[in-house]
Image 1 (cartoon, rainbow, N blue to C red):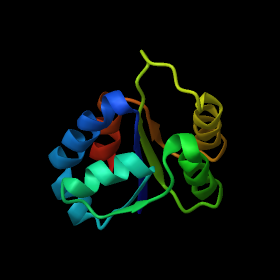
Image 2 (tube, rainbow, N blue to C red):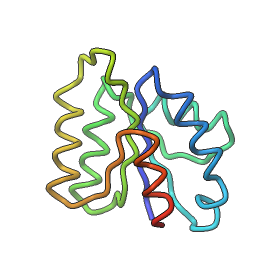
Image 3 (cartoon, rainbow, N blue to C red):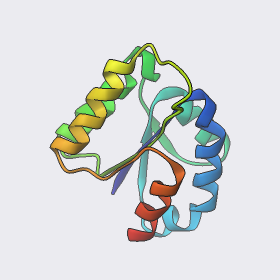
Length: 120
């Protein structure tokens, strides 16, 4: 199973905390993590193996969206910061839309991500 992890700057610490809290599930289920660049670097520093793509503003969101369309990415955990503006908002919207089009589970906050992890 391939899970994409993405987090806006104000949410990266929460993403790493979330991953640490669910390390047993991630290891037990043999899950491959993919991510945008900076989020992936933070996850790697916490000890996770991650396949990193470009940073979100440089096209990383679009790269992950491509994997959703190809049927390679099975779930997206995208911890969004609703209180900040994001210059690459069109890419973000595209990724969210493609998750809906291709029926890929998507969590945009830790509470929803928690429910998805319990369902694995």
